[in-house]
Length: 78
Image 1 (cartoon, rainbow, N blue to C red):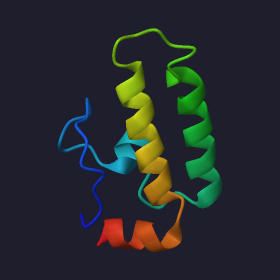
Image 2 (image 1 turned 180 degrees about the vertical axis):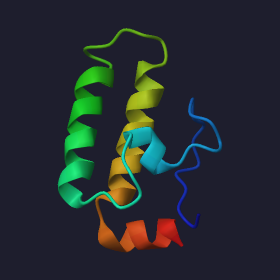
Image 3 (image 1 turned 90 degrees about the vertical axis):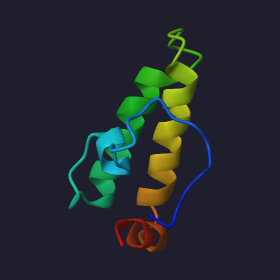
Image 4 (image 1 turned 135 degrees about the horizontal axis):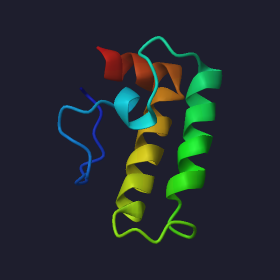
């Protein structure tokens, strides 16, 4: 992928942004947003006190930022 946020992650190196959001490769923008909202509600550090919550929250945000924009999603997919 050409896109990286240069941060460490609790997600597997083989786990894509699609995996992080729990969506399919051909998901539309509504599915991407719904998955993002669902995961943010679950993993927001103010609501989830798990030690990995902050890192997962950041990973979810990074995935959403890339996949919610058609240009960056195309770059990521290629």
